Image (cartoon, rainbow, N blue to C red; front, side):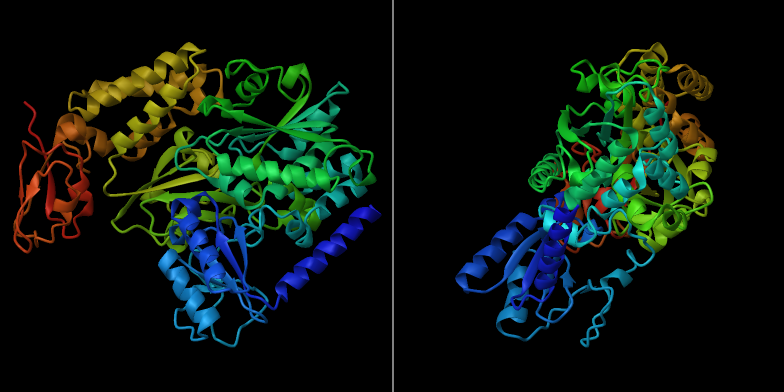
Length: 621
C-alpha cells in the first residue's frame, strides 16, 4: 500500500504541475465522434503549426465530453487561467485559435465556455457546464470523460483513480457487496437486476475458480454509451472490474467487446499495459493478496451475443447461442464455473460508489431506481450526444431541455433499442426509470434514445426493428426464428399497401407467442416495437391499410412526390441532392419533378425548407 501511496503523491504532483504549466495546453476530443467529425485533420494541423511556429504547446488527447453535435471540440489551457473550450474546430478554426490566443494575443473568437467548475474567470466567459445540454446532467460515471487523457494512468490516479479499490480492500469482500447494496445500483445493461444480489449469488456459489465478464457487446442501433465511456475513461471500467472480482472471489476476467470498436479496444489495451506496469493487475495487487488478470475477447458483432449465455458460448469458442436457464451463470457459467456478467456502465460506476459511499450514490434517482444513467441521445433532436442524468428525470426534460427538442413537431421516442418500444407525445412526462418504462411497454435497455419527428412513419419504424431482430436471431428456438420473420413479412405487406385489418390481429397474436415462447431476451422483447406502435399509433396502421396512404410520406409504394409551385422558391437545394436529376429548373423559379426519373429516395422532401415538396398518396385500386 505504501508503494501506491507514493504513486498517488507523484500523480497528484504531476497533475498540479500540469495545471500550473507555464506553457499552453491544447486538448482535442479524439473519441469516435470527434474522429468522425474530422478531429484527426485538426490534430495534424495543430501539430504542424507547433513545429512551423516553434510554439511551446503541450498537445494531448481526451475522450468525448458529451455534446457530439459540437465535435470536434478543442480546449485550451493558458497559464493561470481555466481551460476554455471551442466547438466544431476544423483545421481553419484551429489556426485561428492558435493565431489569436497564442501568437498575436488578440482573442476575438469566443469559446463555448470554461471547464473549471471552481473558478470564475475575469473575462466573463460562462461555464461550459451551464450550456443547456449540460446544466441538467449529473456526471458520475462520465466524470473524467473529455477532461483527462484516457491513455495516461497518472491523470486517472491524480483524479481519485483506484481510491475505490483501496476502500474495497479495507472493507473486505462482504463489505463491498454491502456497500453496493446500500447504493441500490441495478444492472445498466437493460434488465435492471440488483448488482449486489448478482454478486452475492456468485460469491456464495460453490467452486474455487470463478470468472468475471464485462459485457461490452453494445449492439443497439443508435447506441454508443459503452463505447464512448471506454474511449474516454478506460481505467474506470478496469478499476470497477477489480472491485467486482474481489467481491465475488474471481481471479480471471474477460472483456467481451465487439471488433467494430477498434479505438475502444486500443485504449483498453493501453490501459491494461499501464496497470500491469503499476502492479494494479496480476499478482498481489496493492499488497492485498488478491490476484486478477483481464483478457480481451473480440466479438464478431452478433446482436444475440449481448445475451449472457450466448456471450459465454462465444468466449468458449462455440457458436453464440443462448441456452435455457437454470442453471444461471452465477452458479454455472464460463467453463461450467460460477460467473458474474456485468455491463460496462455498471462496472465503471462501482469505483465511484466505493470512493464516495453507497449512501451518497443512493441520493440520486428514485426510490427504486437509484443513481444516474447514461443515454445516447440521437435522431431528430437538435442536440445529439452522450448524456448522464439522474434516474427519474422525465422524457420531456431529456428531449426538450437537454436535447433542445426537434425541428419539426415531435412524434415519438424509441427507448431500449430494438428490444424497446416507441412512446408518443403523451408519454413525455413519464419518469425515466425501470418500472415506469416497463409499465409503458418498453424498457430502459442499455440507454439508447432515438427521437423522431413528424417525418417518421411508425409502421416503417416497427418494420425496421423487426427486420433487425429477425436477422440477428440465432435461430435456436422456433417462436423467435419463425415468428419474427412472419411479423416482418406482414409489416412488409402493410407498407406496400397490401395489408388487411385482420393482419393487425395476427401481429398481436404472433407478438404474444414470441414473447412467451422465446428462449432468451432477444426473442422475448423483439415484438416490443410492434406492440407499442400498434398501441400508441394505431391510426398510422389504419391509414396504410384502409386509405393506402403513408401519413409521413415514407413508404415508397404508397407515395408519389411533387413540387408545390406556389411554395417553391427555386433555391435549388432539392436539385443538388437529387441523385437521378429528376428535379430541374432555373434558380429562383419553381422547379419541376419528373416522376419517371424519381426513385422516391425522399432526399428532396427532407431538405426542403419551404415545405414545397409534397408526398401524396398513390391511389391503389
